[in-house]
Image (cartoon, rainbow, N blue to C red):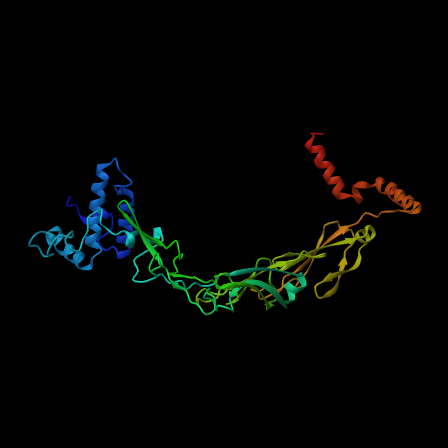
Length: 378
């Protein structure tokens, strides 16, 4: 066996932690294992080097001796008192990999059966509310489907009067060991699925699962200012735990319905307000809706379509905000429809007068036409 520095073999620093040593060895063992490299004799050599380094550095006493005396600590008569491959070690074929690869293959060393106490699953409930409810807050009730403990067997899964028995396949350990070449793999028992127990007489209401589907009604308080995808956590209101495990949580996810008048942008509100042609040209005062009632705004003469008027503090106060947003009113000049003959006559007369001095009355149209002429080089 090559006497390379063990730290260099594993590619770690001399102050590496136990977890770093284990991680480095696992990586090298997976890479150079003879089963994975049947046609590469050097791979087995590298595998043995890594294994020797790991067995030394993972043992606190051997590592201390190696740090002080190097390889001499394990030579005959040395300070270490014997080879790292002595009675306490193992060859390549006899080495137990369950401690190294247990998290990969689903197992690990255990003195007894695997605990089957499990926390209940978290649940999600999508709750749709109105914009007014989101702005002011509300309290509502929801009906949630969930898996709860079976009242007949009290979660054991066994028929009343009977009890689960020890699994005959794994002997109650919940795990079985399988040999695959050089690997000794520990995995959940296929018969009891890792519980270590079997149910000979299943409970009829829950079919042996220990849980049944139920619905429960919960009261949910919605704080003012919530927005789309905000979550409200109801602790312990998720699915019931398995074998005495804690219940999961219920997450109520907010969805705000589209509003007929307002569109929300964070804490601001936007709305469109149609105004007549005469109001836009001559000015006037109009009423607009807000979440708190009506408000008035003055339209200055010669206002153009799309002009925005802002009402401060008429928006929404967000959950994490100290102030209210604003309401932005976008005025839209509305073209009249269903005109009478008299109205058409007056508009033609107005248009004729307007054509005499169109540049003065239609500054935007004149500016646009000048840009068009420049574009075509006229």
